[in-house]
Image (cartoon, rainbow, N blue to C red; front, top):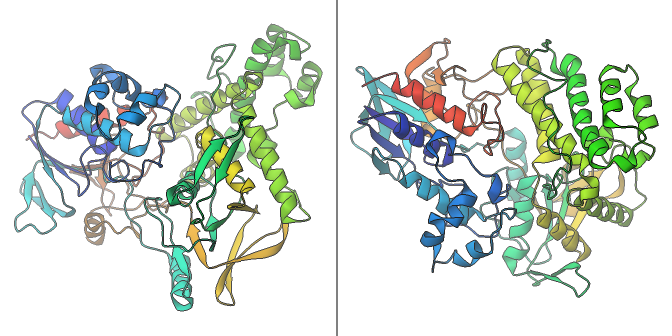
Length: 576
């Protein structure tokens, strides 16, 4: 059987791995202008200042029944020999289970995974520009080729496809061009624009892309971090840095990755929000159960891990918590210190309602907030928050299960789940390494990063970009604006030529509400404009419709491996 995989990053590599494990006598063509295995995002040719956002012990995307090593196991085994004496050997020698590998180092792992494919694999380092029906098979046209590849099935795994700027971005870019300013639209922080030392730069967004941009514009320009004799992290500028003004809707960065462990062990999950629940409106009917699951995880750890901070036993509290109509009063009587009571509102919107008399007041508040966040994510005394994260993770998995079964209204799935609940989950539990937030504090203390506040508004006036927040008096004027966030991948805005060709002919369709590539949930076959599933075209990845667990695969039944396995089985069922 002849198969073409378009896209050679981790997703395409994962599908290739499953094809090789399940099929025989395969000839696989892999098409990508970037290196097979790491693809564009994880390729070696990028600064090692850019890190993974999961510790090496948490990256186990290819394990499954075939037993390919996790990232950490690979570093301790085959990776040790492959990296010995190379430019990445020093970094590899310093890794521990809880450290975060650089993207180039992780890319080496992905290259090794790709090389394990046992089928006949031919790599084409170019871009696929079209695919058409060809008899009983498919013709894949490659950029610059005079003849197409003829295969039995095509799998689209392009990863983060390019996106054309929308009207707002085009307007900002035109303003920048006409006034000699710098504007960078949403996208990965793979490179940074040319900026003058001391130039005022607005960064809109405080998620993971912001962290990457911050790192490239500071350490990437020669600045250094060091520890004082007292152990405090400080930043020593190189003099080449611009001044970074950072803000977002929420006004604070994502919470740091936890670095402590549950003292009482994993809570029993799911308990309140299970796949047996009914309700099509997520926010109205299911969210209260999600909250109870989060609270249940938190108090399981507080009562069993820190019994000295409660007035009753877990055995007494647990059934009352499950049945009481007045949970708040129960918690108040069982947990005497208000600081030990879980505050979901403060966690989700820490700056809600706050007003500052000056930017200096905002800065002081931010330093206290970030310092407290680092403490709560690393000190075992605050391990109850890990219980809350466990409850949240369970709720995410249940939500995915309900959505896959069609038990959440499509509109609610898009508006409430994809645009509200899952981003909230990422903000709370999928933030940067703790080191990065410590660096953010040091950069702020050095005057390199300055905070703008919540509900950030950016406008243009008098030949410059202007930023303001209702929480802080005054405005900030800048000569550069970087959108520190990723663009939303949609079929109507993508720059991918293959997807554009299919969409123009009605041979693929956009999911209502999200605009992402529509596929049949059961087997990931592309859906045409008329709603028919194409028998020989498949797709998976961030540009494809559907909600799913992250690539860290914390829930195998819904994770990265499961999707790849199901997709490979569907492709192999096509036959030659």
